[in-house]
Length: 400
Image (cartoon, rainbow, N blue to C red; front, side, top):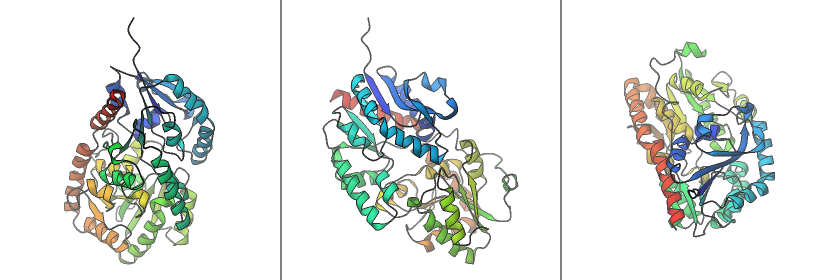
Protein backbone atom coordinates (compact mmCIF):
# COMPACT_ATOMS: atom_id res chain seq x y z
CA UNK A 1 0.00 0.00 0.00
CA UNK A 2 1.31 3.44 -0.89
CA UNK A 3 2.46 5.60 1.96
CA UNK A 4 0.08 8.52 2.60
CA UNK A 5 1.22 11.88 1.29
CA UNK A 6 2.29 14.47 3.87
CA UNK A 7 -0.35 17.09 4.62
CA UNK A 8 -0.18 20.84 4.07
CA UNK A 9 -2.80 22.83 6.01
CA UNK A 10 -4.10 26.08 4.53
CA UNK A 11 -5.77 28.21 7.21
CA UNK A 12 -8.01 31.03 6.00
CA UNK A 13 -11.38 32.20 7.26
CA UNK A 14 -12.77 32.68 3.75
CA UNK A 15 -13.61 29.65 1.59
CA UNK A 16 -11.39 28.66 -1.34
CA UNK A 17 -13.76 30.26 -3.86
CA UNK A 18 -13.07 33.66 -2.25
CA UNK A 19 -9.37 33.00 -1.73
CA UNK A 20 -8.98 32.10 -5.41
CA UNK A 21 -10.08 35.68 -6.18
CA UNK A 22 -7.95 37.29 -3.46
CA UNK A 23 -4.88 35.16 -4.29
CA UNK A 24 -5.36 33.96 -7.89
CA UNK A 25 -2.41 31.56 -7.57
CA UNK A 26 -4.45 29.17 -5.41
CA UNK A 27 -5.31 26.81 -8.27
CA UNK A 28 -1.73 26.77 -9.52
CA UNK A 29 -0.47 26.22 -5.98
CA UNK A 30 -2.85 23.30 -5.37
CA UNK A 31 -1.78 21.77 -8.68
CA UNK A 32 1.90 22.23 -7.80
CA UNK A 33 1.42 20.48 -4.44
CA UNK A 34 -0.74 17.63 -5.74
CA UNK A 35 2.00 15.16 -6.79
CA UNK A 36 3.64 15.15 -3.36
CA UNK A 37 1.24 16.56 -0.73
CA UNK A 38 -2.38 16.53 0.34
CA UNK A 39 -3.75 20.05 0.75
CA UNK A 40 -6.28 20.51 3.57
CA UNK A 41 -8.10 23.86 3.54
CA UNK A 42 -9.71 25.02 6.84
CA UNK A 43 -12.30 27.79 6.53
CA UNK A 44 -15.89 28.98 6.91
CA UNK A 45 -18.49 28.06 4.30
CA UNK A 46 -19.34 30.16 1.22
CA UNK A 47 -22.35 32.46 1.17
CA UNK A 48 -25.37 30.91 -0.48
CA UNK A 49 -23.64 27.54 -0.59
CA UNK A 50 -21.88 28.47 -3.84
CA UNK A 51 -19.06 25.99 -4.28
CA UNK A 52 -16.58 25.60 -7.12
CA UNK A 53 -16.32 21.84 -7.33
CA UNK A 54 -13.43 21.89 -9.80
CA UNK A 55 -11.39 23.95 -7.34
CA UNK A 56 -12.40 21.86 -4.34
CA UNK A 57 -11.42 18.67 -6.16
CA UNK A 58 -7.81 19.88 -5.87
CA UNK A 59 -7.89 19.87 -2.05
CA UNK A 60 -9.77 18.61 0.98
CA UNK A 61 -11.95 21.40 2.35
CA UNK A 62 -13.01 21.29 6.01
CA UNK A 63 -15.61 23.97 6.79
CA UNK A 64 -16.88 25.33 10.05
CA UNK A 65 -20.68 24.94 10.31
CA UNK A 66 -21.59 28.44 9.14
CA UNK A 67 -21.14 30.59 6.07
CA UNK A 68 -19.73 34.07 5.50
CA UNK A 69 -20.73 36.71 2.97
CA UNK A 70 -17.60 38.76 2.33
CA UNK A 71 -19.57 41.41 0.45
CA UNK A 72 -21.73 42.07 3.54
CA UNK A 73 -19.65 44.07 6.01
CA UNK A 74 -21.83 43.24 9.01
CA UNK A 75 -21.92 39.54 8.23
CA UNK A 76 -18.18 39.49 7.61
CA UNK A 77 -17.31 40.97 11.00
CA UNK A 78 -19.94 38.98 12.88
CA UNK A 79 -18.62 35.73 11.42
CA UNK A 80 -15.03 36.81 12.04
CA UNK A 81 -15.86 36.97 15.76
CA UNK A 82 -17.27 33.44 15.50
CA UNK A 83 -14.03 32.44 13.75
CA UNK A 84 -12.08 33.69 16.77
CA UNK A 85 -14.36 31.66 19.00
CA UNK A 86 -13.62 28.54 16.97
CA UNK A 87 -9.85 29.06 16.98
CA UNK A 88 -9.27 26.49 19.75
CA UNK A 89 -11.13 23.89 17.68
CA UNK A 90 -9.14 24.78 14.57
CA UNK A 91 -5.80 24.58 16.36
CA UNK A 92 -6.68 21.14 17.75
CA UNK A 93 -7.58 20.00 14.25
CA UNK A 94 -4.25 21.24 12.91
CA UNK A 95 -2.44 19.24 15.61
CA UNK A 96 -4.42 16.13 14.69
CA UNK A 97 -3.43 16.46 11.03
CA UNK A 98 0.30 16.64 11.95
CA UNK A 99 1.07 18.58 8.77
CA UNK A 100 4.40 18.95 7.06
CA UNK A 101 3.60 22.68 6.91
CA UNK A 102 0.86 25.12 7.91
CA UNK A 103 0.14 28.07 5.63
CA UNK A 104 -1.40 30.76 7.82
CA UNK A 105 -3.16 33.20 5.53
CA UNK A 106 -4.90 34.85 8.48
CA UNK A 107 -3.04 37.83 9.89
CA UNK A 108 -5.92 38.91 12.12
CA UNK A 109 -4.60 39.94 15.56
CA UNK A 110 -3.09 37.08 17.59
CA UNK A 111 -3.92 34.29 15.13
CA UNK A 112 -0.44 33.86 13.53
CA UNK A 113 1.12 33.76 17.00
CA UNK A 114 -1.30 31.02 18.10
CA UNK A 115 -0.48 28.97 15.00
CA UNK A 116 3.28 29.43 15.47
CA UNK A 117 2.94 28.33 19.11
CA UNK A 118 1.92 24.86 17.86
CA UNK A 119 5.58 24.31 17.04
CA UNK A 120 4.83 23.12 13.50
CA UNK A 121 6.57 24.32 10.32
CA UNK A 122 4.61 27.44 9.43
CA UNK A 123 4.43 29.93 6.57
CA UNK A 124 2.78 33.24 7.46
CA UNK A 125 1.36 35.61 4.86
CA UNK A 126 1.74 39.25 5.92
CA UNK A 127 -0.54 40.93 3.42
CA UNK A 128 -2.53 42.94 6.00
CA UNK A 129 -1.54 44.63 9.26
CA UNK A 130 -4.77 44.25 11.18
CA UNK A 131 -3.71 45.97 14.40
CA UNK A 132 -3.05 49.09 12.34
CA UNK A 133 -6.23 48.61 10.29
CA UNK A 134 -8.38 48.36 13.41
CA UNK A 135 -6.65 50.88 15.68
CA UNK A 136 -4.69 53.19 13.38
CA UNK A 137 -7.25 55.99 13.23
CA UNK A 138 -5.35 58.24 15.65
CA UNK A 139 -1.87 58.71 17.05
CA UNK A 140 -2.43 56.77 20.25
CA UNK A 141 -4.04 53.89 18.36
CA UNK A 142 -1.20 53.76 15.86
CA UNK A 143 1.42 53.62 18.62
CA UNK A 144 -0.43 50.80 20.36
CA UNK A 145 -0.90 48.97 17.04
CA UNK A 146 2.83 49.27 16.26
CA UNK A 147 3.67 47.85 19.68
CA UNK A 148 1.26 44.93 19.34
CA UNK A 149 2.45 44.15 15.81
CA UNK A 150 6.09 44.15 16.88
CA UNK A 151 5.22 41.91 19.82
CA UNK A 152 3.45 39.47 17.53
CA UNK A 153 6.15 39.50 14.85
CA UNK A 154 8.92 38.79 17.36
CA UNK A 155 7.04 35.66 18.43
CA UNK A 156 7.56 34.27 14.92
CA UNK A 157 11.33 34.01 15.41
CA UNK A 158 11.41 30.23 15.47
CA UNK A 159 13.56 27.96 13.29
CA UNK A 160 10.59 26.42 11.44
CA UNK A 161 8.73 29.67 10.64
CA UNK A 162 8.89 31.67 7.43
CA UNK A 163 7.00 34.83 6.45
CA UNK A 164 6.11 35.81 2.90
CA UNK A 165 6.00 39.39 1.64
CA UNK A 166 5.07 40.85 -1.72
CA UNK A 167 7.88 43.41 -1.94
CA UNK A 168 11.34 44.04 -0.52
CA UNK A 169 9.91 47.16 1.12
CA UNK A 170 7.40 45.00 2.99
CA UNK A 171 10.27 42.75 4.03
CA UNK A 172 12.14 45.71 5.49
CA UNK A 173 9.02 46.63 7.46
CA UNK A 174 8.84 43.11 8.91
CA UNK A 175 12.50 43.22 9.84
CA UNK A 176 12.01 46.60 11.52
CA UNK A 177 9.23 45.05 13.60
CA UNK A 178 11.65 42.42 14.86
CA UNK A 179 11.56 39.42 12.51
CA UNK A 180 14.90 37.81 11.64
CA UNK A 181 15.58 38.73 8.01
CA UNK A 182 16.54 35.13 7.17
CA UNK A 183 12.91 34.12 7.77
CA UNK A 184 11.51 36.58 5.21
CA UNK A 185 10.87 35.53 1.60
CA UNK A 186 9.55 37.68 -1.24
CA UNK A 187 6.77 35.84 -3.08
CA UNK A 188 5.26 37.97 -5.84
CA UNK A 189 1.58 38.79 -5.61
CA UNK A 190 -0.66 37.08 -8.15
CA UNK A 191 -3.31 38.46 -10.44
CA UNK A 192 -5.73 36.65 -12.72
CA UNK A 193 -5.53 38.33 -16.14
CA UNK A 194 -8.71 36.54 -17.14
CA UNK A 195 -10.70 38.76 -14.76
CA UNK A 196 -8.99 42.16 -14.83
CA UNK A 197 -7.96 42.86 -18.41
CA UNK A 198 -8.35 45.43 -21.20
CA UNK A 199 -11.73 45.30 -22.93
CA UNK A 200 -12.11 46.02 -26.64
CA UNK A 201 -14.16 47.99 -27.18
CA UNK A 202 -14.03 49.74 -23.84
CA UNK A 203 -17.44 50.27 -22.24
CA UNK A 204 -18.93 53.66 -23.09
CA UNK A 205 -19.37 55.91 -20.09
CA UNK A 206 -23.02 56.39 -20.99
CA UNK A 207 -23.59 52.65 -20.40
CA UNK A 208 -22.62 53.20 -16.77
CA UNK A 209 -24.66 56.38 -16.37
CA UNK A 210 -21.62 58.65 -16.56
CA UNK A 211 -21.26 61.94 -18.45
CA UNK A 212 -18.72 61.39 -21.26
CA UNK A 213 -17.80 65.09 -21.21
CA UNK A 214 -16.25 64.67 -17.74
CA UNK A 215 -12.99 63.05 -16.60
CA UNK A 216 -13.41 60.06 -14.27
CA UNK A 217 -10.81 58.54 -11.95
CA UNK A 218 -11.68 55.45 -9.91
CA UNK A 219 -10.49 53.88 -6.70
CA UNK A 220 -11.74 50.39 -5.86
CA UNK A 221 -11.74 48.01 -2.93
CA UNK A 222 -12.90 47.78 0.66
CA UNK A 223 -13.50 51.26 2.09
CA UNK A 224 -11.76 52.11 5.36
CA UNK A 225 -10.18 55.22 6.79
CA UNK A 226 -6.71 53.76 7.24
CA UNK A 227 -6.28 53.65 3.47
CA UNK A 228 -6.56 57.44 3.34
CA UNK A 229 -10.01 57.93 1.82
CA UNK A 230 -10.51 61.07 3.90
CA UNK A 231 -7.19 62.43 2.67
CA UNK A 232 -8.16 61.63 -0.90
CA UNK A 233 -11.46 63.50 -0.49
CA UNK A 234 -9.62 66.56 0.87
CA UNK A 235 -7.38 66.55 -2.18
CA UNK A 236 -10.35 66.11 -4.49
CA UNK A 237 -12.04 69.17 -3.05
CA UNK A 238 -8.90 71.21 -3.74
CA UNK A 239 -8.54 69.78 -7.26
CA UNK A 240 -12.08 70.80 -8.21
CA UNK A 241 -11.18 74.48 -7.90
CA UNK A 242 -8.92 74.02 -10.96
CA UNK A 243 -10.68 71.09 -12.61
CA UNK A 244 -14.45 71.26 -12.12
CA UNK A 245 -14.89 68.59 -14.81
CA UNK A 246 -13.14 65.90 -12.75
CA UNK A 247 -15.12 63.18 -10.98
CA UNK A 248 -13.96 60.66 -8.39
CA UNK A 249 -15.55 57.21 -8.67
CA UNK A 250 -15.44 55.02 -5.55
CA UNK A 251 -16.01 51.36 -6.37
CA UNK A 252 -16.64 48.93 -3.52
CA UNK A 253 -17.41 49.20 0.14
CA UNK A 254 -18.00 46.13 2.36
CA UNK A 255 -18.98 48.16 5.40
CA UNK A 256 -17.39 51.55 4.90
CA UNK A 257 -19.97 53.15 2.62
CA UNK A 258 -21.90 55.03 5.31
CA UNK A 259 -18.72 56.52 6.77
CA UNK A 260 -17.54 57.50 3.28
CA UNK A 261 -20.87 59.14 2.44
CA UNK A 262 -20.64 61.23 5.60
CA UNK A 263 -17.11 62.31 4.69
CA UNK A 264 -18.27 63.26 1.18
CA UNK A 265 -21.18 65.29 2.56
CA UNK A 266 -18.94 66.98 5.12
CA UNK A 267 -16.86 68.37 2.24
CA UNK A 268 -19.83 69.18 -0.01
CA UNK A 269 -18.65 66.75 -2.68
CA UNK A 270 -21.93 64.99 -3.42
CA UNK A 271 -21.89 66.18 -7.05
CA UNK A 272 -18.20 65.41 -7.57
CA UNK A 273 -17.96 61.88 -6.14
CA UNK A 274 -19.81 58.81 -7.45
CA UNK A 275 -20.17 55.72 -5.26
CA UNK A 276 -21.08 52.48 -7.02
CA UNK A 277 -21.43 50.38 -3.88
CA UNK A 278 -20.25 46.77 -3.84
CA UNK A 279 -20.54 45.47 -7.40
CA UNK A 280 -21.83 41.91 -7.88
CA UNK A 281 -18.81 40.43 -9.67
CA UNK A 282 -15.16 41.13 -10.48
CA UNK A 283 -16.21 41.35 -14.13
CA UNK A 284 -18.46 44.28 -13.22
CA UNK A 285 -15.54 45.99 -11.48
CA UNK A 286 -13.40 45.38 -14.57
CA UNK A 287 -16.02 47.03 -16.80
CA UNK A 288 -16.06 50.13 -14.61
CA UNK A 289 -12.28 50.35 -14.47
CA UNK A 290 -12.04 50.00 -18.25
CA UNK A 291 -14.36 53.01 -18.68
CA UNK A 292 -12.21 55.29 -16.51
CA UNK A 293 -9.73 57.94 -17.61
CA UNK A 294 -7.43 56.67 -14.87
CA UNK A 295 -7.32 54.29 -11.90
CA UNK A 296 -6.07 55.33 -8.44
CA UNK A 297 -4.02 53.23 -6.04
CA UNK A 298 -4.00 55.45 -2.97
CA UNK A 299 -2.58 54.85 0.47
CA UNK A 300 -1.79 57.17 3.33
CA UNK A 301 1.89 57.41 4.29
CA UNK A 302 1.77 55.26 7.43
CA UNK A 303 4.01 52.41 8.65
CA UNK A 304 1.50 49.68 7.74
CA UNK A 305 1.28 50.99 4.16
CA UNK A 306 5.02 51.28 3.43
CA UNK A 307 5.47 47.98 1.66
CA UNK A 308 1.93 47.30 0.52
CA UNK A 309 0.93 46.35 -3.00
CA UNK A 310 -2.86 46.83 -2.87
CA UNK A 311 -5.17 44.87 -5.11
CA UNK A 312 -6.29 48.22 -6.59
CA UNK A 313 -2.79 48.58 -8.03
CA UNK A 314 -2.52 45.29 -9.88
CA UNK A 315 -6.20 45.31 -10.82
CA UNK A 316 -5.79 48.77 -12.33
CA UNK A 317 -2.56 47.92 -14.12
CA UNK A 318 -4.10 44.75 -15.57
CA UNK A 319 -6.92 46.72 -17.20
CA UNK A 320 -4.44 48.74 -19.25
CA UNK A 321 -5.83 52.03 -17.98
CA UNK A 322 -3.38 54.70 -16.75
CA UNK A 323 -2.69 54.05 -13.04
CA UNK A 324 -1.88 56.88 -10.64
CA UNK A 325 -0.33 55.52 -7.42
CA UNK A 326 1.12 56.68 -4.14
CA UNK A 327 4.89 56.64 -4.38
CA UNK A 328 5.26 54.52 -1.24
CA UNK A 329 8.22 52.10 -1.32
CA UNK A 330 6.18 48.96 -2.09
CA UNK A 331 4.25 50.43 -5.00
CA UNK A 332 7.32 52.26 -6.29
CA UNK A 333 9.09 48.89 -6.58
CA UNK A 334 6.59 47.94 -9.27
CA UNK A 335 5.45 51.17 -10.93
CA UNK A 336 8.05 53.16 -12.83
CA UNK A 337 6.87 56.74 -13.04
CA UNK A 338 5.96 57.76 -16.57
CA UNK A 339 6.79 54.28 -17.90
CA UNK A 340 4.03 51.96 -16.72
CA UNK A 341 2.17 54.24 -14.35
CA UNK A 342 2.26 57.64 -12.65
CA UNK A 343 3.53 58.19 -9.10
CA UNK A 344 2.90 61.04 -6.70
CA UNK A 345 4.63 61.89 -3.44
CA UNK A 346 2.85 60.29 -0.46
CA UNK A 347 0.81 62.70 1.67
CA UNK A 348 1.29 65.46 -0.95
CA UNK A 349 -1.99 66.69 -2.45
CA UNK A 350 -0.28 69.01 -4.94
CA UNK A 351 1.80 66.13 -6.27
CA UNK A 352 -1.36 64.01 -6.55
CA UNK A 353 -3.18 66.63 -8.63
CA UNK A 354 -0.10 67.13 -10.81
CA UNK A 355 -0.01 63.39 -11.56
CA UNK A 356 -3.65 63.45 -12.67
CA UNK A 357 -2.94 66.51 -14.81
CA UNK A 358 -0.23 64.53 -16.60
CA UNK A 359 -2.83 61.91 -17.50
CA UNK A 360 -5.39 64.34 -18.92
CA UNK A 361 -2.85 66.66 -20.60
CA UNK A 362 -1.64 64.02 -23.08
CA UNK A 363 -4.23 61.23 -23.51
CA UNK A 364 -2.18 59.42 -26.15
CA UNK A 365 0.88 59.26 -23.91
CA UNK A 366 -1.30 58.18 -20.98
CA UNK A 367 -2.79 55.37 -23.10
CA UNK A 368 0.73 54.17 -23.93
CA UNK A 369 1.66 54.19 -20.24
CA UNK A 370 -1.53 52.24 -19.47
CA UNK A 371 -0.66 49.60 -22.08
CA UNK A 372 2.83 49.32 -20.59
CA UNK A 373 1.20 48.90 -17.17
CA UNK A 374 -0.76 45.88 -18.42
CA UNK A 375 2.48 44.29 -19.62
CA UNK A 376 4.12 45.10 -16.29
CA UNK A 377 1.25 43.44 -14.44
CA UNK A 378 1.52 40.29 -16.54
CA UNK A 379 5.23 39.92 -15.79
CA UNK A 380 5.08 40.97 -12.13
CA UNK A 381 1.93 39.17 -10.96
CA UNK A 382 2.19 35.79 -12.70
CA UNK A 383 0.20 33.22 -10.65
CA UNK A 384 2.59 30.45 -11.67
CA UNK A 385 5.57 32.31 -10.22
CA UNK A 386 3.68 33.00 -7.00
CA UNK A 387 2.62 29.35 -6.67
CA UNK A 388 6.16 28.14 -7.36
CA UNK A 389 7.50 30.43 -4.64
CA UNK A 390 5.06 29.01 -2.09
CA UNK A 391 5.77 25.42 -3.13
CA UNK A 392 9.51 26.04 -2.71
CA UNK A 393 8.90 27.30 0.83
CA UNK A 394 6.87 24.20 1.70
CA UNK A 395 9.62 21.96 0.36
CA UNK A 396 12.25 23.92 2.26
CA UNK A 397 10.43 23.62 5.57
CA UNK A 398 9.84 19.91 5.04
CA UNK A 399 13.51 19.39 4.25
CA UNK A 400 14.58 21.34 7.32
